[in-house]
Every structure is written in C-alpha cells, then in structure tokens.
Length: 53
Image 1: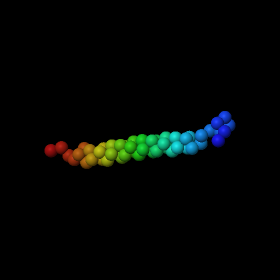
Image 2: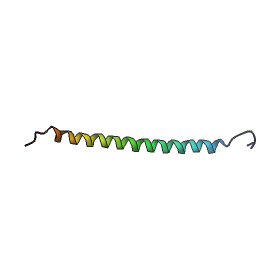
Image 3: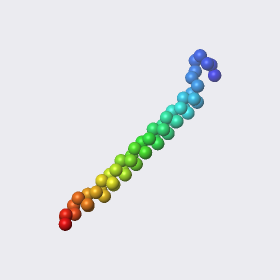
Image 4: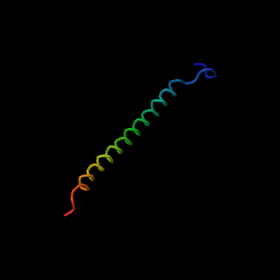
C-alpha cells in the first residue's frame, strides 16, 4: 500500500461498522423506552375512566 496515495480502508470500514453498531444500539434503546412509556400511559387510562365512588 502506498502511504501517500491510499487510505487504510480497512480501518475506516471497521470504524464505520463500529459507529453503526453504536447508533443502532442507541436507537433500539430509545425505541424501547418510548414503547414502555406508551404502555405505561395506557395503564393509567382505565383508572381515569372509572367513576369515582
């Protein structure tokens, strides 16, 4: 490999995969948090609809 003309493509490809793994993990974690919050909100709705005694 010519150090002046070519980049170390293996390094950059591996770095891109690492960044993608980090992004996907963060996205899944955020989505799971939103789903949990959604269902937590649904649990409260029936309590609000019950008539007070």
